[in-house]
Length: 125
Image (cartoon, rainbow, N blue to C red):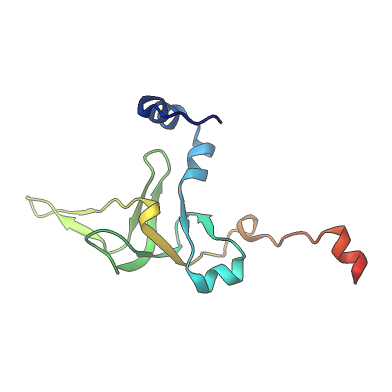
């Protein structure tokens, strides 16, 4: 995909992209301890992951991800709400780039499949 300097083209590409492409864009950095385990610097955000807010007014808040909106590129974290004028509580939307994944939900096997060893490494052993 070619990149453009024109903001309008970037926005158009975002709004017209397919859901599987948007899902790849909705990824967050991984904490250093977890990075060693997974061998990845970033992973796609999913429900059930434990995340910590790193930027913004709610910095330091930690909790499970309750919902992910790939279409709008937002994440909702439990107990992170604001009160409306009528007293209702509404969950706050957070961009995935503003959080760090502290603990990944390991129920999805495809997400954390082990890397296949190369033939060269096997021959050496």
